[in-house]
Length: 262
Image (cartoon, rainbow, N blue to C red; front, side, top):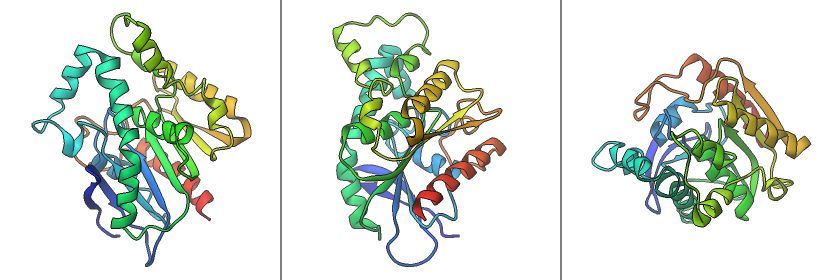
């Protein structure tokens, strides 16, 4: 089994897992959670999807992993306290999405990646980035997957203490990341696997079920018994051995992408 490759692509840190065999291979790009595992390296260790004949490239989210400020998540936590939506959730998704085209082009230059559509996977807030790639870009995608994803951002904002004081600007921002409302833009884009832990936050689980229902035959819902929101133990920054339930998620994702690669 080959060792992970680390680097940066247009300024975005990544951890890449090579396929078995030689020559160019398809590409699957992921965006990690902000819960554990909360770095590209930790997400790669949690969900390596070994055995796939594809590159699995795990991109780092803003201010996470190699982009942490002073080696900790404290700066990100300060943004949460300042304004969980407009200082934290919304700009993180926007930045990760906006920096993706240049990162993808750089990955194609750095790695022996085959031409053609890519796979995309997003966990938690990273799921909103994957959904933006599907809904708001023309990047060809052969298959997509979500994991305990931020599908309806108001549900995520509601997880923070207190009633959020929405105004016109914040309402527009949160609604721009409402992928239940954008189901029509997702329809026909790519086959979508919606992985939902049965013990995930109830609102996020309800959103996952509803999205799968909205997309009908284009989507599959995979419920994971016993799985809560995180996939790893805290602090979730460094690579760690797979937890048993995470191993099951990894199996489901490997089977899904393998089916669409074959």
